[in-house]
Image (cartoon, rainbow, N blue to C red; front, top):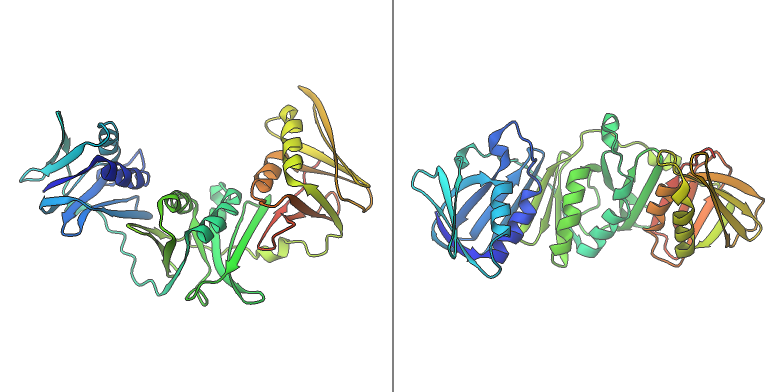
Length: 371
């Protein structure tokens, strides 16, 4: 192998692929990135056996072949090279090492044969559709914060992506950790109807979220009941799906909450943030006391003190005291784009529905806390 390319192209590709590689690996080859030089340029591939990322960059290929080298090591080396440098990669005849040359810098890395590198064979991915980068980013951003981190309920460790018929076919994303639920939807793109409901793992969601930033205007999605593939221009992300059944989330979305609170989102979030400063790290509970046209936020922490703040709001129902986890409230308000947030409440022990007053394509459910 003998290849020359711009440092900027190389560092960008390695920045994408090295993130998939786990820092600690019991299988040595999984710590490596596969580098393959061919007619199409230089291809980089990394995998953790559940997730695979492939990126192709333009390069001057003088001699085609492939090898694998430690992913984090080569990324750190290239990242530290001077900007604008031309980088030459050269593998020896036996391909047991890779020479990296840029200006007066030379590095030699130990290599493992590319034949040992695993391939995450995707098989047939019959359902295919395209959607704009902005739409995919919206679906992910508005739901990923509610993904559960509790490994025992593994079927909640991702975003449930599926289609529903609700005044037309919608592509819907849902995530929940049992304390809160986030749902976002958009008109289903052509080709999405009839797709199976799939649970996209948290790590895949995080990588997709990062790759959207560098993607073009459109993202290609292919999926089967077992795997999903996202195509972001020159970057292709393939992942296994979570093998489990997502709960019937519709049962926890309240339909009959009769008390409506309309609040300025920015003022509400700032007040919650201020009063929660004295809350205990463990509980993070904030109490909302509602009366006619007035909301009082209060926190009492026996160890550090107390805080209260009053806001003028739109509320005309009977007085109500209800408690929430302040961090969960802030996570949800951060996703509301409009000026006003709408909260539909029932009683201190029932889930509350939150949404953007100006938008009907996202909603949030939050379980109350005892305060």
